[in-house]
Amino acid sequence: MSLTTVEVDEFELLNAKNSWISKSCLKDINRVECHPVLPVKGEKNVLVTSALPYVNNVPHLGNIIGCVLSADVFARYCRLRGWNTLYISGTDEYGTATETKALEEKLTPQQICDKYFKIHSEIYTWFNISFDHFGRTTSPKQTEIVQEIFKEVHNNGYTTTASMEQLLCENCDRFLADRFVEGTCPLCKYEDARGDQCDGCGHLINATELLKPRCKVCQKTPVVRSSQQLFLNLPKVEAKLNDWVDKSGDDWSYNAKVITKSWLKDGLKERCITRDLKWGIPVPLEDFKSKVFYVWFDAPIGYMSMSAVYTPEWRKWWQPEDDTKITYYQFMAKDNVPFHSVMFPVCLFSTERNYTMVNHIMATEYLNYEDGKFSKSRGIGVFGNDAQDTGLPADVFRFYLLFVRPESQDSSFSWADLATKNNSELLNNLGNFCNRALSFLEKFFDCVIPEIQLGNDELTLLALVTRDLKEYLSMLDKAKLRDGLRLILSISRHGNQYMQFQKPWVLIKGSNEEKIRAGTVIGLSCNLVCLLAVMLQPYMPQTVNIIGKQLNIDISSFLLNNFVAVFLPSGHKIGKVLLNSFMLINNKR
Image: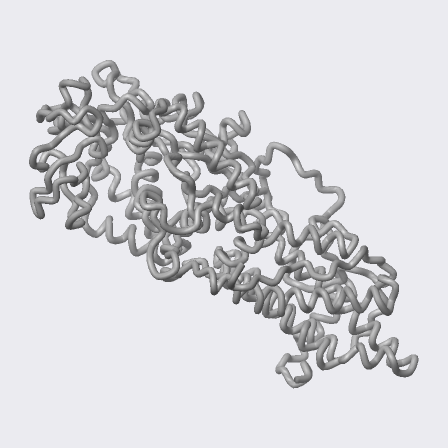
């Protein structure tokens, strides 16, 4: 089908022509990229965080797409736009899950954290996650900043005390967290119910309700004792939180809005922020010195402490001057929403200081595995180390996870579908267009971009590509990453259709005028390959590096704008063309 049959108006054609002739996508060579990254007055400053993965296990692909990979794509996109962008994340290391894992593996909690921090770091490095800093909640900075914030909250009158009944193991001389208690379910009589939930009937229960409770460590019977705890007074901040959510919530993902509104509709209740545990940040009050902070209270503050480890000027991001604007994006799976949309904001409001508040909470639904669910505890699904062991490039997993990203509803990872999407979209669509254009240039033009003379078909193609490019920018501005990827594939389809209709392999064998025409077709197609590489950079960075070497150009030298300009001028010589930058995957593999 001829592109001239597609409806584009005169305004689009004129804009496409003017942009091609007179505009540039090159970065400003006078702009100095500073390290560490700091916000700049009068410029766009973007703070990106991803929910801290818990450190008691190897992350599976559902964890990875829900937080670190989604945030990585968005952070890369922001840098591609030329915005000052800081991407912070790290491991969540305190709490009972760490102590439980330490008991299982006969290690100390610190040894467990060290072991799994290394595993997480190696997996995210393999996935090419571009953190500016990947930290830990067990750092001294975390203790310092958590205690500082708590003191402000406490001194401002936003905490209360109350007595709670807990199970005490007299043999171990410790109060037992829910995960350290087992017993008989009071509802279904299942004999191995946990202190928080029964796997037999699925009901949530309190540890003190268990029949025949036993300590998971020594198997002795615990006794019920009262213990004084500190609570965060959420009702005292409820009106302010409601007002903030009303003003900010429109820029959140739909599920984040629904979950938060549901919490607010039911009315906020005081929430316990301390635990009788050994592994955690000590409470800096004399009457509570034997207690530590509940992990939900201290973990989100990790974004600040990790920023502080990254740069001593961290407050420029978290407590900016009035004339410096920070736009803050948080990425997570939906089960983390209440901690980021209710608990953490209440904590910051209670300090009565001007901290940077999140503008955009971007939460995914769940990624399932084949016909079931990912499960860390049961080892079901594809884990980060499994992905490495397949021999497939990290970019294949990045592409597929983002293609099926559960943005508005649950989606599933399927090995057969991964092969199908890779072969049909990456190999036969995007890879086919790149390979055809570059191979033709190498064979018939000695790798040199020929002169490009724009006719109606070329202007129509540029107008269509510009239309998709603008939509791509609109989608990624809203962190709709899956839709952005589909628009890249749409542009490569336009390119394939253009080449198929123009038939440069026929033109090159014709008259001198037809050979010049073939040069225009291939020159423009190679420029679109470069545009696609720039757009693909947030999604498949390794693949883009390979394409960049073939194009003999540094893809990172370009910024992305809402127009298509010349990327490869006439006379530019590309490098050696590979047979294909993408690979075929068969179902057997």
